[in-house]
Length: 318
Image 1 (cartoon, rainbow, N blue to C red):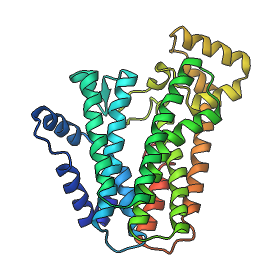
Image 2 (cartoon, one colour):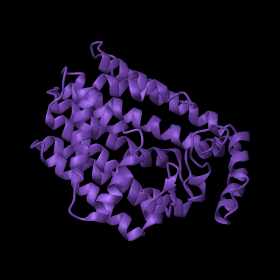
Image 3 (tube, rainbow, N blue to C red):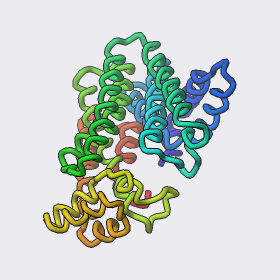
Image 4 (cartoon, rainbow, N blue to C red):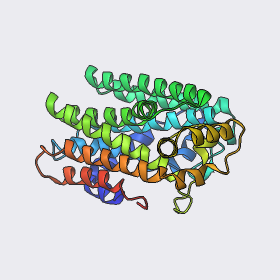
């Protein structure tokens, strides 16, 4: 799926990759070395894809301001991952040591700050105050979402509403900034920008729900450890669903286990009480809403690829 998107974007994707790499250049040797390590191990790069695909809803090619928005979305995302690794004391990401583990938490924060500053600089270079507003709102959302998640990890009383608040701020908000900036830089009107924002909101929720389902799915071969969220005291949708199905008495027992650092029984509890099915149903509902948000757009390859990306999230093995 992702290869199809890159093939469709063609020269636009090459322009993104070139600007992305050149924007990270520094006279500091260790910074260049670590940046190279991060770039070589970058993930799906879904956010710049969404930015460029959204722009292609309105134009056959994209201009440099759109490419700058795509670069900003990936840099901000990567910065938040480095900061998250420090906050979560994570040693591994995508099967490789984190910057925090290899060097130090201090270095990871500083490099995360560097990526964040380069992302903001890329936004400023668009010379569009409304696009700048999209990303500043997103940056505030990211911080608020992270702090609220930390608060809820301490209290262990996360509700479904709390969970949606966290993932809307930590995941969906950057999806929205990426798509809205792509649409605006390509000349979309306010109504169309709002439509792609709705698409991105529901897609972002679905994307995070899928990731949280995978954390409770050790049978799937996806190259990431399972059970990490609950060890960090993060109560996500599969566990929330199991709590709703099991009742208060069993919920209290599981919370007591989490507080005591006993995690071996959590996965069986979630499976036995239908937590994965509960979360999958929510994921599929969000995906339907994302696709519906694009219903009024004319058929074109970019629209079909956006819809295909959304629908692929429903497939647990995808």
